[in-house]
Image 1: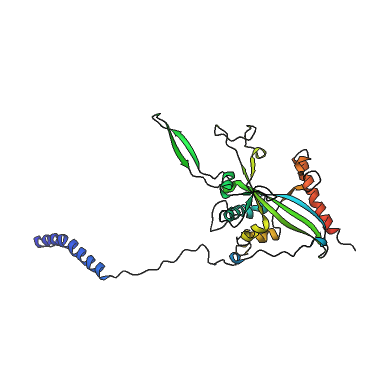
Image 2 (image 1 turned 135 degrees about the vertical axis):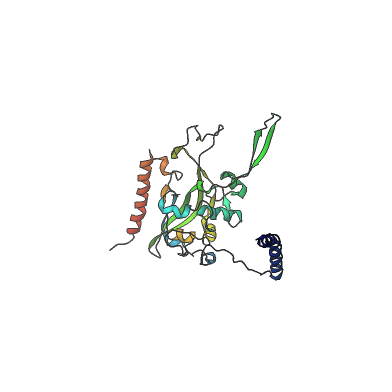
Amino acid sequence: MKKYFIFILLSMFFYPALYAQDQAENEEGEEEENVEYLKPKTSVIERTIVKEKKPIEYAPVIEENVLWSQTIWRRIDCRSRMNFHLYYPTEEVDNRQSLAQAIIEGIRKKRILAYSDEEFKTQVNYEAILDKLGAKDRETRQEKMDGTGDTVMLQKGYINWAEVREFMIKEEWFIDKRHGRLDVRINAICPIRVYKREANNGASEDDDGISADDEATKTRTQICWLYFPEVRRVLAKTICYTGKNQNANLSFDDIFHKRYFDAYIERVSNEINNRGIREYTRNGLEAILESDKEKRTLLEMESDLWSY
């Protein structure tokens, strides 16, 4: 029994040292294996078709072939379900971009020129656009606890893409007698920021100091006007997901070319300084009815081209 005890004690003393020595020899004998890690992909398909696309070419329009034309301003409200593919994502998801993100990114990379008016008279730079988006860096002052002064801190600005939820488009409708049809060309587009203005006390107020919880009291700011034929060069290379088929290879240029969006007429060219519908209607319902009336006029004009 005494010999058994001595054996156990010797085993407990020498075994850890022998195990450590054996482990060190094994590690020295092993060679480091060169492993090439794979770059993670979010999809099994490498999508390059849209990135190589070019804008769809329109047929040339000759003045003598145009029998009638009219300029129409439409507003695209991205809260409409038919316009969700233009609005989302409001944050970067799987390298996807919304319409606003694609346009502002094109301006930042100087692929698109931005203007302050729809007549393209005055250019604006990217810093001015950031200011209208509320994304410029700001200095904030905070009083020190010991009362010796203020601490100046730099608050980094960022673009809240959820606020860019409306677009104004200026388009020209015309009758082409050569092709015998009513056609349309979009001439300009303007992203619009819809937000609650911050009052001095930190509460959200509108221009009259009224609470901005209601949609009608929110501030709407036109970011800039863009020449749409120039914007198309960027939109043609930007994928648009409609949610029905992820591999449909649709670009934003295809969306506008196929008129796959919902918009209501806000203004029609007229003799009184092209005044808007809301300027001569009494309330929102009357403005909607007037907008629908202008839509029907366009449809009836196209059907009246044909006679039997």
